[in-house]
Image (cartoon, rainbow, N blue to C red; front, top):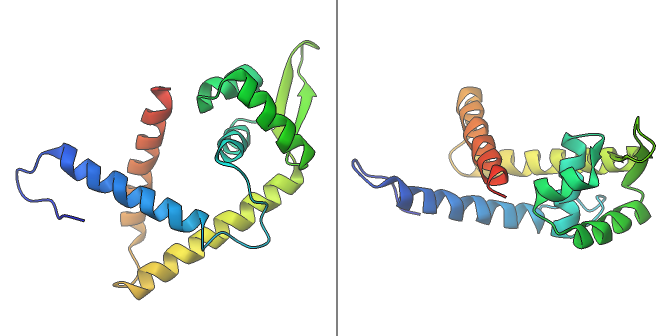
Length: 154
């Protein structure tokens, strides 16, 4: 990865950021994925994360937020339901179906997040030591802004 130099255009630096984020995600989803967690497809992960963050979301809202076609979302939801990770419930209007994660999904997601957190802490310990809480807060804020901006473009 190249280091930014004074006056460097932001696009090449963002290319490096995107490359590093992709690499970290690939490693976390591979070798550092907790053995006791349920393995999911990328579409299942996207849907599960959205429903976890937005309990009671409708299928239409979930399709729009994840960028999935409705037919692909239906297939993904059936798979998540069969795995016991998502359930459909009727909303206030009996015609509305709302999506919710199950207790099993909550437990699996907690296991995954804890495993990933330990893996990142270990990686930093092997490569220069821990990072300050304020640096992590800044990093998280920037990455969340990127994620939200990308989601808004779907």
